[in-house]
Image (cartoon, rainbow, N blue to C red; front, side, top):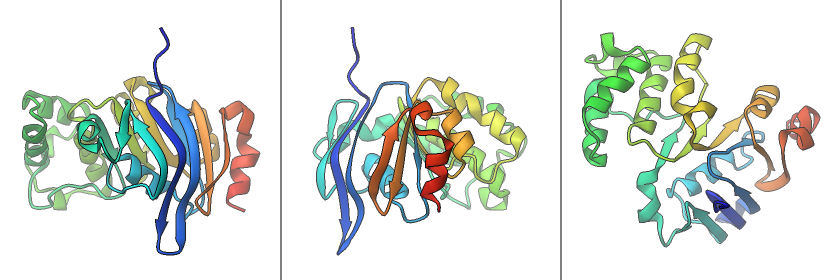
Length: 228
């Protein structure tokens, strides 16, 4: 039996005053597939993630996630999304363990899950120190744990490997990589690396959709041209 698309966009637009941050984006992403979004700064990548995360309302067009229409049914999908952005969304004076336990209680997740994740990203030895003492890479690892704590079927990832060395990046692969089995939307400035993990590729420039296709159809040259 064919599954419905996990994410469906039709003519999606978001306007700030006279500026169109998103202008008519349309696509369908199957379950457990990865959409990689390319584009220069200001292209609309972060705006797209914020709309999908139910943090922004579309100005026009339609968006559906896991069969639920946004923004009318945002409440039904919000707890099924994991978000990882440039901001770690952590309380600086709390430890990693306490930050994650707080989120666990909000999502009614067993506290044992916190320790499993801290072990997985090798933060258990410093798990009780305030996160404001952490390096940027340690913050990113903690934030990744927060994003997957409630085992969401959809992950929204804004340049998720920024500030990570190769070792730390490898630790996160089972959580946020393709092997996690989740539907993923991630932004990237790395043409070759992004294409390598994509099932579907979206190019944005000035809020407009410049290309949409498989990595083989799009190719490195088209992605590189976005930044020219």
